[in-house]
Image (cartoon, rainbow, N blue to C red; front, side, top):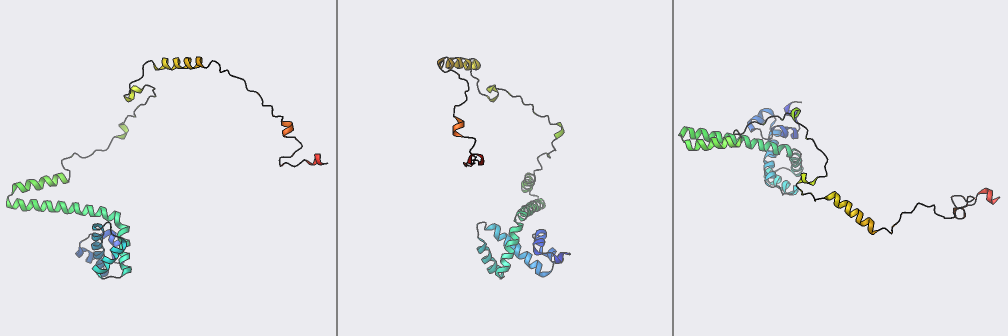
Length: 215
């Protein structure tokens, strides 16, 4: 499939922000017309983030003279590509910013306006973070695993430990054990439920008498 046969959504994914003259070299006039229309509609869409779908459609109808079906189709394409378009838009604006700063620098250079040249160069360097060192990959093979040791010492958390804690625990145990000397342990005993009378063996589990008993 060549470029002239691509669906509109694929064309927009690739060339939504491509210059018009380049679009006309790659695609047919109807496709270029639609791409330019969706590009303009996208600008309105991001400028009106709270707008309802109905408002978008009404705008597209009045602005481009298309029918309602075409407007909803354009909206569907914009929504489908929105995450990608947002990134593409940021990349485009970064490119345009650098282009404008460099153009300003060149114009100032021609006028020998060193003050403006310095400001443009400083803005360019700051925006592109050329003053920062390149990040280097972390040598994961050299990272030492942090050893952990279990402890009941709260001082490792910055908490002051209670003095004589274990001794205090033993003192309280002896104290409360002494206060409850009347409590005595007893051995387990089988409960006398008279199971033979309560659950006679000649009665089935469903409550009916066995055949032997009936006979």
